[in-house]
Length: 153
Image (tube, rainbow, N blue to C red):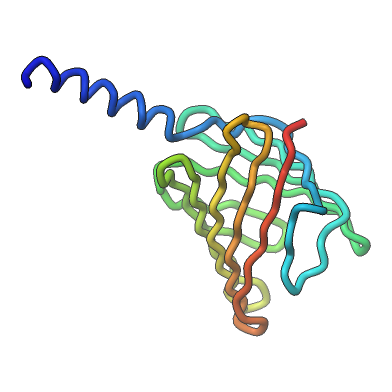
């Protein structure tokens, strides 16, 4: 049994290292596989992610019939709360791993209304598809879910 314990500990470390995939890359939204609930889908979304260890940075370009917008967000994946400044105000959020899924919880006050979201990011086994499931809470509109499916470029 004493000989087996080091091997079990090593196997545990290997499994936990594999549990957190690297999300780096340029990702393009596949609108046909995505679901936006009561919201109209955007015409295009391109997300560029730099993921290095505990650091996660993303730049997101989104185009709709009304406008084009680019946002930049940074997180650490250790659950630490960070504040990101955006054109619509400050967004406070935290990201942490739950197995091989990244969970990002955030909140933002827009015109006195607090919007909350919980995103669960998962990467396909081949590393070519990033799926983000988002649960949104908007007081005047209620709660709803959004599914975004991105293809690696």
